[in-house]
Length: 94
Figure (cartoon, one colour):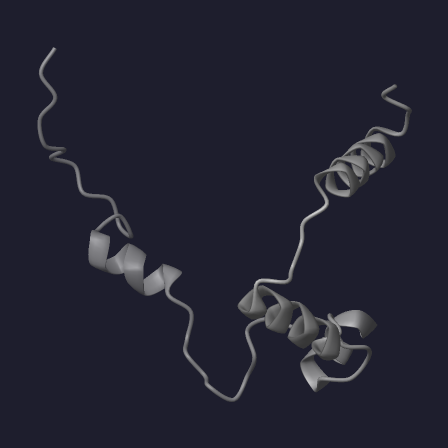
């Protein structure tokens, strides 16, 4: 079956007419969307609240790494990973 051009033109079906109907009038003084921020988002936007990390601790760790004195405790890391997984799953794995 061959599909060819449509010969019948209906009012309002021309691409230019559809675009004109679909495009809303642009008015920069009227907002198109209203956004409401949660209190947590407002606090982050204003820079208030507690810091996400302890800068002094980060500096101590960075200094220890630079000096070659930072040691990793793989058992403690594994225990924390297992604990977090148990918490996420809502049950004990062992």
